[in-house]
Structure formats: C-alpha cells, structure tokens
Amino acid sequence: MKTLKAFVALSCGLFLLIGCESEVKIGCEKVSLRTDCVNKDALPLPAPKYGDKPAFESKNLDRSYLGAPPQIPHSVVDMVISPETNMCLDCHFPGGDPIPALPDSHKTIPKVVVDRAQRPQVTKVVGHQLTEDYDRGRYFCVQCHVPQALNLKPLVVNQFK
Image 1: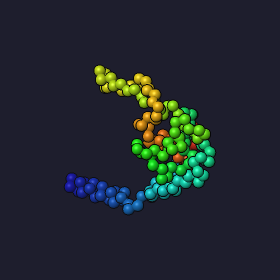
Image 2: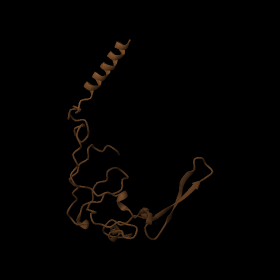
Image 3: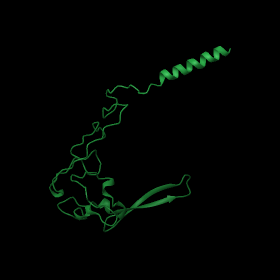
Image 4: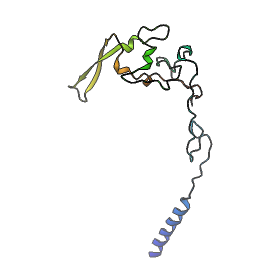
C-alpha cells in the first residue's frame, strides 16, 4: 500500500514537472483582431494623428451609424473643455453660422422624476426644459463627439445601422 501511494505521488510530481515548462508555446497565427501573438505583450497602437487643417477648413466626417453624434473633424489637442471654460463654444455657440451651431437639443435640461414607491426605485425622464444657453451638464463635448484620427483604421467593418 505504501509503494502504491509513493508511486502515485511520484507520478503526479513527474507530470507536474513535465507540464510546467518555463515558456508556453502558443503560435502567432491570427488569434486576435490585431493579429498579435497571445503569449507576448500587444504592440501599442501608433499615436493618433489628426488633420492639420484649421477647424473652419476641415470637412465634415461621416457619422459612424445612423443617429450617432457628429464626429469632430479637427484636432482637440490643447483645447480646454471644462465647466468653466469650453473652447468648443468659441465657434459652436448657439445660433452660430456657417460653422455648425449648437443644436436646440443641447439647450434642453431633462426633467427627472424618481419614483420612490416602486422597488427598485425607478428614475424617469418626463420632459425637457428649454433654456436660452446650453445645458451646463453637457459641457464635456468629447464624451459624445469624438475627434477622428486619420491614421487609425477600425479593426472590423461597422455593420451597425
């Protein structure tokens, strides 16, 4: 009985040593969308490059999908976007022309009601209040509107319509 236990322990130890090689050998075939090797660190993407034309000379980019926010066709590097200072509104002020102006949808503040009687509590938007200026809660423009890098291509074709 002792020899059987010793044999099983020795066999398990031998399998453990064989199975624990120092380097995992996994191929570098196309196993990810970026075609990187699984057992190596992914290569970093190049830094995004934006168009060098000034904002008022750049052409509008296609939207990613129907209903998507417009993309920013110029660089936003060094632009200050904060609740106190929003450089986007220097050009895109309400009623601005010919540059795309801030639409009315950005001048509405949602009316929110919390139904505490329901469990779990439900938050509902029950309407909008139109303001003269823009909704200060929407100051961070690049949360929805993204600058489009010219040197980076999507990994897969967008089929979301």
